[in-house]
Image (tube, rainbow, N blue to C red):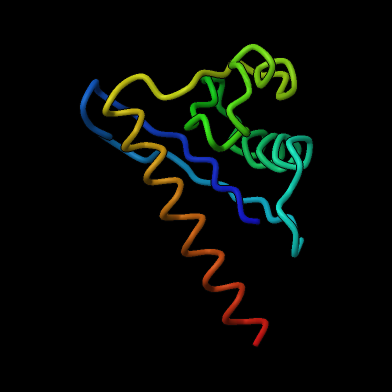
Amino acid sequence: MVCAAVAVETKADSVDAVDSMEFDVHDTEREPRFEIVVDTVSRAVSRLGVEAPVVAEKGEFYNKPDWIVEGALGADFKYVETIGERKAVGVAHHAAYAVRSLLLRHDT
């Protein structure tokens, strides 16, 4: 599993800038548990060095209520509310997928 944490500047309907990007990898062949996802996201986000809420789609944290995710992360958290936030999450997904592809290619 590859987690990409992306610090972005957004408007309501767009991503204006990507300020920084960090990654964390958890090597597993099984679907990771909620706690593993939280730990992986926390490590990637902490490397950004930015004080901003973590934003994700509900499925990323097994559809847990936002207050549970926020408590587990120990950081401000919210689910996507705007088109700009959705696009920011899309940037993170593309980056994580690209890193995962490189890692898989390197292992073969």
